[in-house]
Structures are given as structure tokens and as C-alpha cells.
Amino acid sequence: MPQTSNGLRLAIWDVDGTLVDSRAVIQACMEAAFRDTGLTPPDYDATRRIVGLSLAAGIAQLAPPDLGAARLEFLVDAYRHTFTRLRADPALHEPMYDGALEVLDYLKQDGWLLAIATGKTHRGLDGLFAKHDIKSYFDTVWCADDGPGKPHPFMVEQSMRALGCAPAQSLMIGDAIHDIAMGRAAGVRSLGVSWGFGRADELQDAGADEVHHEFRTLTESLAAFAPA
Image (tube, rainbow, N blue to C red):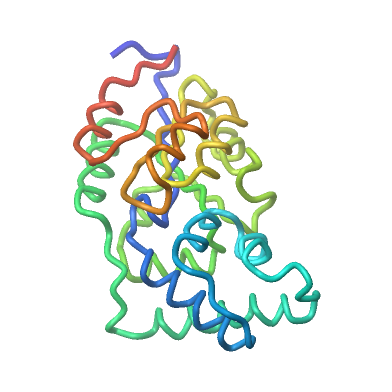
């Protein structure tokens, strides 16, 4: 496989909706938080459009524009409390997508570097790692509380900087338009997946270089990746 002189290849992964099916959990938390704040909960179609943004930024988009700073802060805290409670519930169903673990295995065995760029906080990501033992796959992890969130390129740029990779050696993989926008802003090839929160047409319109509907074709694309 043709590679740049140092032979590095970096796959930067979103988490929610890309590796882990968190759709039901996120919607349940959003509905509970809005009800606790005395507001009409958003429907799933509204919620899915803000997933990937930092929690505060996403909820601010869903909240009434005249809510006020104090109630907005209460709303964000209500979401966090509900999420913490649900994650502690043994009955919580937040599985990895079929094929996710296999592609992570393949990439590590093939010598790739792996990173996470997520709208989760480190606390939220640690909770996910406690449920799914995948932390060891990743060489660097960047979250919403490290700096500017999606679609700002910060997390992708920091991933590349931490691992010594150039944009031509790096890929962003995510299910939301915010993932694609972040990757494009950082100058990396950006691959969309259609099994999460974003629709295929939305990912294409956002400028995804490819949109995949199953892990098989995504893995084939990664196997063929040849850094310039």
C-alpha cells in the first residue's frame, strides 16, 4: 500500500451513532430533561440533528429561544443527571454496532493509529468505556471539554498533532453532519456512515467524501486508503 514517508495512517472516530448505538438513550435523556424543566420534549428528528455538538450547544438549539440562561443551565444539568442515572441501570441498552469491534481490530492489526473526536465529555466517555472495553484501541482521545466542539476542527487537528500525522494521512469517520464539517475544516478525508443520527443525503450534502451503509464497505475503503 503506498504510504507517506513515515508510513502513518490515522482513523479519527466519532462515537455516538458511529461505533455505539446510543439513539434510544439520548432521546430518552432529552425527553426527561425537557419534562423536568417544564418544557415540551423535542421529537427524535430534532434531537438527532444536534448530536455531535457539545451538550450545551446542542440543547441550546433545541430549547425555546426565550428560555433564559438560568433555565437553560437547569435543562443541561437535568440531561446530565438523567444520563448518569440511566448509565447506572444494568438494563441500559447501548450496544456497539455489529461490525464496529471487527473494524477496530482490523485497523490495529494493520498498523493504523486510532483517535476519538466526540461531543461527549471525558466523564461521559469514561462511562462508555466502562460498558464497552474499547479504550485500549485508541492512541489519543479528544472530547467536548478539551476545547472548541464540532464542527470546529480543533479535535481533528489535536489528534493529528498528538500522533504526528498530516491531513493527507488522516481520515474522519462519523455519522453526523457536524463530523463531516469538522473533518473538512481540518482538511482530512471525511467518511460518513448512515446507520446513526445523520441521513445519507444529509451527509452527502455536508460534503462527505464517501457515505457507507455497512461496516463491510467502510472496511474495504479503509483498506484501500493510500495517503498521498
